[in-house]
Image (cartoon, rainbow, N blue to C red):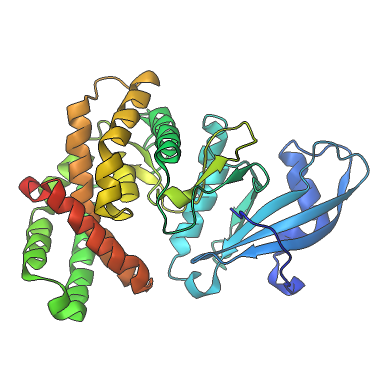
Length: 362
């Protein structure tokens, strides 16, 4: 989402046909936010420099009755640099907003007015509710959130996980289960990436860490048994750092909203918590908030109907998820994300692995 204001020049050919007034009018009618009026003019208000996608705030002007219609919307579409390498991300996010979001509890994600993925051209777009005036991110990246902000974020994440917890539609009409053959192939791919990653880093990757990576790869089938149990799983966000959450502004009543759903899938829910804290926060901040946030997360799950999942089980899943996240910097390097991202993630997640004794799981 876009959090700040301003006008950025953008030539019309860069905008997809969906932003033409007639197409926007039809989309807003389908979304139930426009009745008799019609969109007359579309104007680029701001273009947010997202890393792997283009996020553009569009101002709308109407002709006729338009009470209650949005004065702006968010257009999201692929960043040309990553359009091909991250094509599945666009496919995933469009599927989330068009298939899953309509069945989710209200107030968890922005409303989607239109979304389409073209399998031939691999071009995609989303037209989303603009929350710029009512919501904001907690902090500027990479500053961690305050305790109060983190509590609000984790509470919303738990509400969302609880809504899909062991849901009967998982793997049927919502997402796909990965078979043992699928996960073995994925780990084989990872092992190849890791070998090249380790060669690149040379003596910047210690022998202790190399040993842990090798043991992890060797024992990945056993570690994957937790996932293959198909028990106490939900829809995980997959990129749940705190800057993918929008908090209500101080003078606004509302709920925390989650966005950027391009990596969602059925998974052990603590993968989101581990990515948020162990991969993104340096040790002092993580150590200060980790236990409190895990307690809040578990309390929220229970209060929203999750049964048979103990606080001890949460701890075990969290430690296991922290260990799994040693794979994240390697995957990020493999798709050419900058070292600013994957190197810091590598250092932070290994600090968490050491703090939590995750090597014992091997």
